[in-house]
Length: 223
Image (cartoon, rainbow, N blue to C red; front, side, top):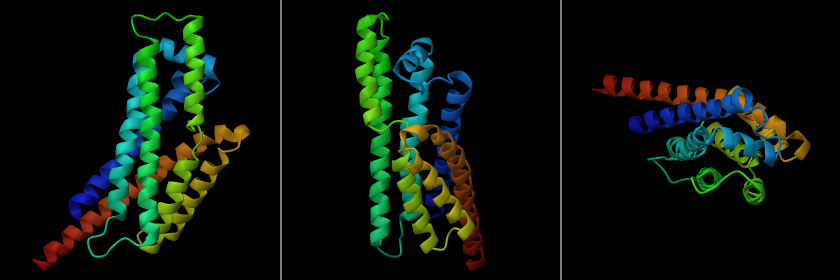
């Protein structure tokens, strides 16, 4: 159990780091990244290798970390999962698959479009717009799937009395901002969702480390 808590804490901190990297790109390197297909294609063309690394860290690594964190928070050695925990674990797998699909489509698209045999021209622009439509169709830029996961995981932790009510309320507020990104005119609120998620992941990671220290102390006292 202590090992699982440690792995969950590390995964939670990695999730926070992934969000930080994602927001750094949006705010510092490519502030027009989400302004449409043409602007995104320009960014990919200028920073193709950087963007592949970015997508890998922000999507693939994040997806793995979400699963590790979910297992650490939800798996119980003393009893079977209740219905809420089962639904939450299913949502964890769905969110990870969703992130994986978006990330690998982006990574392989960059490799395909900007390989040695391609030059940026009309054909590439048209092809990119089709790929961009698929990415947007998967919901890239909308945080509603993550919002459902945060809401469910917070409810599970509340029932287990592992989080304070204030921190659970904070999680529900994060979910609210995530659901707002379903409204096209409010997609920019996704940045607020990301910033608040960073804080939440850090707090949850700290909680898991605290639980691990307490369990170690109990083992020492018993001995």
